[in-house]
Length: 453
Image (cartoon, rainbow, N blue to C red; front, side, top):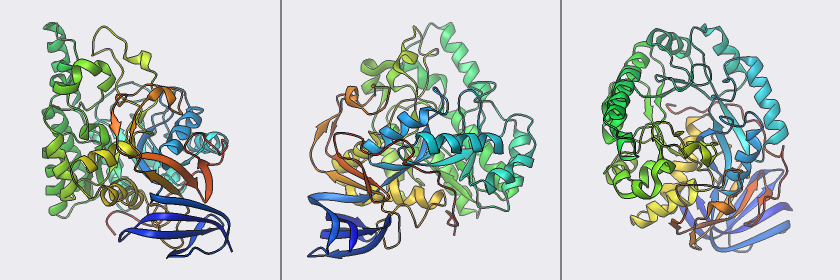
């Protein structure tokens, strides 16, 4: 007797299987079959809808605005978007996660607020020794992140090259990646000053003010420092194929190097969308003109480690500034990640179900050490599931389940809708309402799997 049986087209590791059933017991996938389903306390008939693993969103910023309680709103949005695990960045308000004390504070906030599971990045502050790194690893953080550009001297500081190398050296004997926000500070600041002097202050000036050279220079230096230490260097967002090719060169030379892509780089183009969206599509590094097709080629080549949302919890008022250079960077994305990526793949004639599960579920789970419990519908895995209906929708962020209620995806047509989400075998989202309670999600520690095994 199972606690739950879900029937439909299950997207398994070998591909979609029609007329499948998934049996859940004690929060785990206990059986998978086809044909007549066994008895269960609860049975859900998904019909022709897809049953996919819960999405693992490898890059979110839940606490960048509202502090640790921001986990509640962010994970509500995640659950409604079929995202059952978020990997949250360390740049919390008012101070980042750089010590065991702050890790414990964030774990306590997860236990109080989270509707979805949460894995965590850690960081270091300028001048901080590497002594705090091992306690954070023992505390379960899945990765570390630093920045080569200072957005805030306290919450999002720039880490100097000598300290980056020291962190890499501290991580060299581990499987823990060090990620980077990859922009050269001197180039960006000089180009912004030039744009302001020329009275260019619209969204069309944003990409030019943070040129690919700034992104690629920071990327190349970071990769070389990681190679020197023999550590895993990860670029958390690349906006051009050249960046992925740089990463691939290091990988081919035998070094541990990876690059990540965010879904908005696969959807928007400032030359096409900038006039309508303005600062609503401002992210850093910028969305580049004319790159969508080439970036899809990178996804299909296998050079993209995984695709994430880079969800930012900034209110829309943060965007209403006279100059693009004063507007906040970042967009909400947890409820749109899954339908946006699937739709974009579908519109390109790809096997959307397979590529979606690969890029949004399996690959990030393996990357962050969450495999095989997360990322696939397989025996023994956690029963984190999303039901994806082929019912088309037009995204309306006024109905979103966060506290932000804005999105650059407003008015965009998606070919699929998330109609149910199960967290550990329990219904968390029924297509209309969040069913589970704050604290239903749990802190997820890094396990034994890693990208290069």
